Length: 275
Image (cartoon, rainbow, N blue to C red):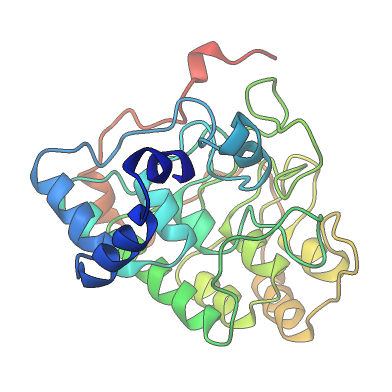
C-alpha cells in the first residue's frame, strides 16, 4: 500500500514494481500451492467480501457475499482452469451462497448488473465476444462434476438474504440458471441448458416462467426480447404444464456424479434466517 512504501523509504514503489515484473508466479500457481498445503476449497465468506473503507465491496458484487466460495467466484469469471483445480481438491460443486446461488447459476449469468440494469459496476469482465462459448464450457464442466442444472435461488427476501438496495438479485427468488441466460440474451446458452435437462415448465416465486422472462423481461430497464430465445422456450414449454413446485430431476449423465456429493447440502445460515 501507499503507507507501506512510505515506511520502506524512497524508491520502495519502484523496487516493488521491478520485483513484480520479474516474478512469473501466476494466480493459479498460488491457488495450487494453497490447496496442496491443505487450504479448504469450500471455505465460505461469513459476511460480504472486504472492501476499501468497509463499504464499497458490499455494493459492487451481488454474489460475493455471505456463503460465497472460491468455486462460485471462479464460475463467475468462467475460469475453467481454477474450477478444475478446486474440484480436484474437493470443492463441493453445488455449495451456494446465502441466496442459494450455485456456481452453475452464476456461470449462466445470474447476479450481474449490466447496462440495462442498475448503475452498479459489472466486474465480471467476461461479456466480450465469445462469452457464450465460455459460459457453456464452464457449465459443461460443472455438470460433469454433478451440478444440478435446475437448482433454484432460494432466498432474496428474508433479512438474511436480501440486499439493502435494488440489485441484480432483487425478486429473483425461485429462479434457475435458465433465467440468468435469458437476462443476457444468450441464445446459445439457453439452448445448451435446455438440451441438458433445464426445465422450461417452472415459475419463480412471483409466478414468472422462463418464457415470460424472455418475452417481457424481469424488472429489466430497456429489456429487448430475443426472438431465438422465445422460440426455444416456446417449443420446450409447449407440451409441459407450468409448475412452480415441481421437483427438478437429474439427467442420466448427472446422476452418478450427484450420488457422490454430501447428503446434507444446503445454503449457509439456514438455521439463523428470520422471516
